[in-house]
Image 1: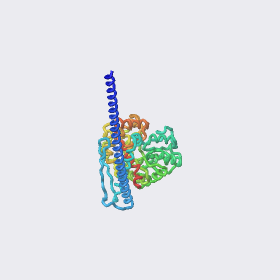
Image 2: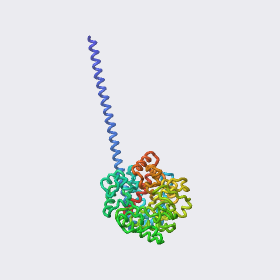
Image 3: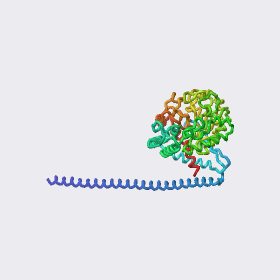
Image 4: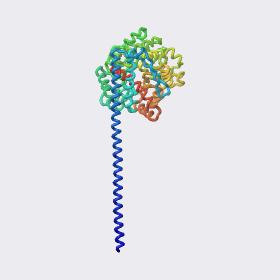
Length: 469
């Protein structure tokens, strides 16, 4: 019995020892965890401190650089000359444009160096804005549409909650107005002003104000019409074209418009042309070229972006793209001798925007693909060969030349893939918009391709704000 009791005591003692050992080991584990947690917290604290120091230094450096740029611009605006400036400098920037084609961008530097510095600042501003945009915002910014196409109303004559909601959902690149939208001076001013205030990003407020039969504002507001381009061209005096578009630019800006789908650069080589007629400055390519350049200056000097149209030329057309397919059966050499001359002149004189027409050019493209969807016309001819680095916009995509053969989404996708920067008035905006977004997500169009187009658009829209620094 005694032996049994002794054994029980031994077992009890051993159990207590085991418990003490277990408690000791548990304390050690807790200590190790505490130490590990402490180490992690110390490392995190060190990381936060280091990050804060780096951020502060980066902010100081950014502020210093911004101050230097502002001082440079202020210095140049006051007439001081940069020490190492030269009379004229050409800077070529090779840019991949999503089609495997290098676009050579040329920036000319004035004697005081202002242009090149402001161009650099402008690019930095534009790239910073684009970097914060969603894909949906980027794509919306490449469409110019009627107010009806985003609000769903039959005729828009005011900008209320419907417009506000639409522009918040679709911050489009621009709105284009027609005679039906224009009732009075106060009405159109208020409508434009509110529409601009509703959009997150600057918009083009556009109109077809060519003069003659195509003058939406002049007709809607009963303003004095500057007359047809044919009449102006017949005078042979380019100053008349300048003064005419100076007048147009002046009243356009007074109502809030900043983009004119004019001047017409088509050379009237076909007397039976029903699409262009007296909208052209005439049949002499050199005369038309001079008139177009003067007209651009008249608009631009009054704060209106000129959009030269209809590349590469509708002057030889026998049909109207509003009604169906138009074929221009000319070779590239033939176009260079006549139709292209006004566009070449416009490009050499700094045109910011060119509209591509829907004509088919089988001798250049190889089939009847409309120019607005042709890589050969936009990326190869207009961009690479003629050196145009501004905004390329399509003609209205609701014309029969497009709608009879393509859906709204396919037409927009093909235009962007061909090299266009903006799509004007698709047959159905939502279909086209959603189609392009889906194409980017699927990789049919790269997002970099979209970014490149938006950069060109924003360079126009933000140029004045940077230039006024």
